Image (cartoon, rainbow, N blue to C red; front, side):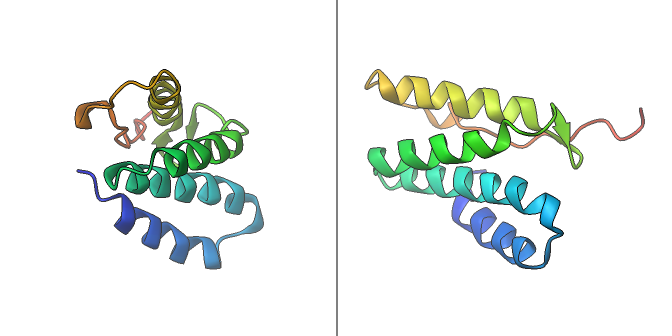
Length: 105
């Protein structure tokens, strides 16, 4: 849990070789991971700006994408952004976790 820097690094490696249509998705995920890394270091402005940029990219994709429950990630990240805008604290349990979609449907 909370390996945002590592996630950022791994997704960046995948982004470098990804097909063009997946690059925007991966950029959005990279930006969210970087945002939450900034959050763990107390950088509220960096967290906000990267959340906004990442969510803007990820809103272009369906609720489930590439086996991921993307709506859950977007909803949680959006909630964190709203909480930060109010100046409230974000508890570690309120940070997003990636859930995989049911592949057997």
